[in-house]
Image (cartoon, helix red, strand yellow):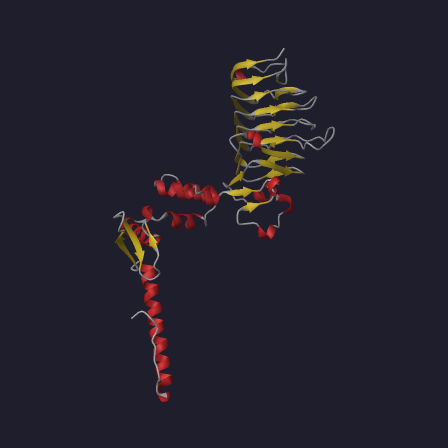
Length: 352
């Protein structure tokens, strides 16, 4: 019944009619096969003789599976969504919908205060942007052959990112030759071991966004440069902007400038961060007017100049930090800041 129609020794006058019957019947059979494929009616359960286990068998293709076929799972999910509404939409459908939304604030707002399924879909790994390290041939890679959301350089990823996107970097080295300007709130995420993800920065990483996050990264000057480079701060948070850091190293050794410059009115919260390598007459951490900086379980050390320098109306919070050098913290009017401006500075360890 499911095979092709065969006709032997037909009457020549009936050939056109037989041909039309054949084409029509073949189309009907193909249509029925497609309907069974889409509705899952071609799957049935059978019992394996030896183990007596139940398995699924496809009557059209002869395929056998131990687990339930995906088409039946999808159909059950669709039926559940129709019965229970938006909160029961399948994950793949939610991900396709969220892909049309800007990560921040649209996608974040859609997931906030809703069900667990929406939150998981909004944070699906498929939304993450990836950057290839130099060791995997990033600099010689053909741009036209790169996959979606995969980039050769950090600058290309930042340029293509939308507000709220996450840019992930695996173990290896990444070149930021002439500096980098980040003007949108994004997350740059590396490895749990920050020594495995190295950004070789030739200029300044300037953070001009009113939010953002660095995690698991080591920022340092190119190792191939001999002597001092031109004057550049390693990381500069622009006025009235904000940047949070976790488990990072900011090392300006080999450069001329501050390690971290927090501009006027900016905010910076850092935890488990190491700031080192500031040049003479510069600072490991420079805090300008009305800025607020929080350092928790961090170290500011091995700087040729001051470790920390701040203007009088800036706020500095130090908790469980190690700050080296005899005049490690300086304000405008003395070697140590006014107590009223320091919310917490314990323990504060100075080198002798």
